[in-house]
Image (cartoon, rainbow, N blue to C red; front, side, top):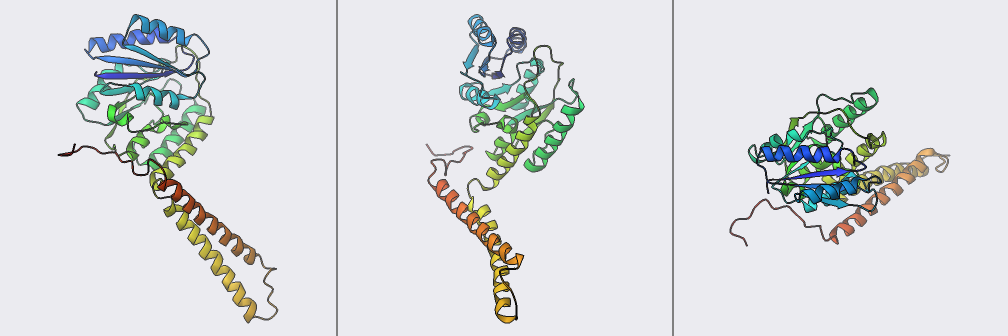
Length: 314
């Protein structure tokens, strides 16, 4: 199969018929064998009934339905497990992403040998101050911390080699960081394509200000996991040792001063309590590193590595 088109959706019953017809027209014109996986994230409207009607009329359409709303990451993760196409393309269901981009995204993966191609909505129709400015700050922080030079991490229109989506697990709110997850898994050939951003035709936006706060926290999590996920003691042990040594040195100085200087009060001096607290914090960090190492050593995934290819080994 050439391409799997994955569409997570939540309360999009109005747009689905038009979107599905548009996708079929594009892939048929370009002779692409395809499947479309519609992941219904617990919609409360008629979305699932519409999905069943579309699938009944075209066997290339498949559906996944959650009992309740779990979020976009969960919908993508389950759809990725089911995807069989050599190239997997994701897009949103609100028709702000254009299916006309599918052939070029497919070509960039197959012919230009990209592992992942992310869309960049350079010209936007929702270019409001309250939405655009936080998005620019968020993307700048993501570029700086991840080292991936993409302009729009949160663009729903992306294309992947099948091996990429089978090598990453998406959870929480990590869907916007799939390029970062792919890089951590060893896929470094990441490209970008300017794509059309269409004005919203149906429904209302499902995202608010909280996504920027949660997105920044998720970025910190990914950055930490990428650097210390397999070696937590290198982080906790380092800073725990530094804190303990600083506190020990400060306490030792005060104790020596107590015995060498007259009328020197030890417990009435703030540095004494600062040194004591710093030693306690250092020991706690060090013990946290030990516990994290014990958990890591007993994890079934502690020696899970992605192998690119094998030669002469069966």
